[in-house]
Image 1 (cartoon, chains in turn cyan, purple):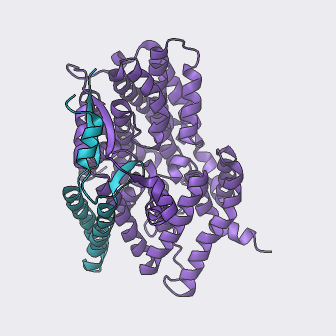
Image 2 (cartoon, rainbow over the protein chains, first blue to last red):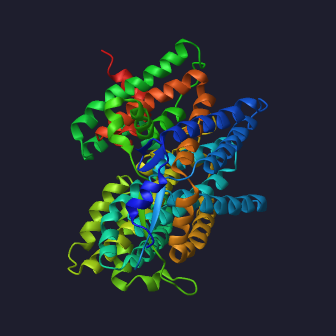
Image 3 (cartoon, each protein chain N blue to C red):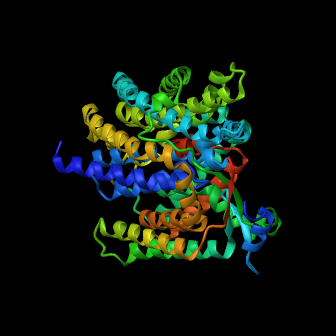
Length: 87
Length: 451
């Protein structure tokens, strides 16, 4: 083990970052709201922008969701500290 | 069956196995919330029924195998169903044998699948004659189911009291949509209310961030700490029958059989009850934990498979917690599937065998060796790469889109209302089972309470 867990944790939190526990895991509140917004725009945007004959709206909505998911995963990093344990 | 359909089934099974290996590992992902929306989307895309079934079977088996990974590696459940196993995994960890957990659980899962697939197919064909009777009394059965599950729940009184108000909320929204002509009178909004229930706890949790008194409890000042350990090296292809000893195989098989017979019961409840019972007489803590963990995993896997297949093949009505939850889209996904015309009606009993076998075989072949050999690496990969923000966003976005699709912009807010109520009563102990059964009998029950 390199550093003590407390030091690692303290170093990871940025100035002005608001963290909260939502659904069993820690998130950055601002990033979560942005992520909800991006995902909604991706999914709903894809659905509405597609030509209005089935199954295009649903397919485009799903593609939009996946693109938004990748964007969010790239933009927002996990708020987890992984600590290795010696067995 | 068409060669092209078989190829599609294989592709669907591979995609499902990979997708749900990743989702299974991510912490805090509820089975219904992650399986239902994606299955629904696939149904509505108009894919061949056999391909849908193959996708779903592969998805549940992969999800069940991999949601044990964070339990073994980090002591946190990868889903609701994995929660009962945490206690025993912690025992093994404390005794310096965390490597045992993963291998025992994954091997238990394999036994569960191997038992459940043939037993479910057999049991389902035996129950087929019941189908016409059950169809006539579907409404009554759902109401009975809601009351029954409420009585079985931890919080019985609030569960019972919530049934009628919750039914009125659902039916009230439907009449509102008809009244202001958001949807034609022939459209009964169902799916998006269902999804509203599944993401209820998450929506309530997010909204609480804006309630000053609740906000304090949710705020954190450090990242989530997860302690991980390295994999023990295993050479070659792991064999579940060597990893489990004879007694573990026996109790896993027995657990799986009972799990199939009690397909209509709550899987989590049965898992806790049977897992503890079958392991209670063992004194040695390591042996006891290993027995409990392998049996529980076998049993949950068996109830997943049987809870989906038996109602689907025999009845065509979702009369099990599994069928009414994660597998719901196979039974009811308007406009494509309704209770009068779903997978049950378009496939004969023989048609089920191939997709189920392909789905199960591919999920086991891909996920089992990976799970046993590389559990820590996968866990590390998902924990480092996939943020919780992105996952929550994905499910939220899907629900918003499907709500819009079913009844337009107003329904996004209607679904938020359902989610808010469902999530709040869920917090109080009214479980998903009670809420889903109520959703199904809402129209019938609302008429019953008019005097």
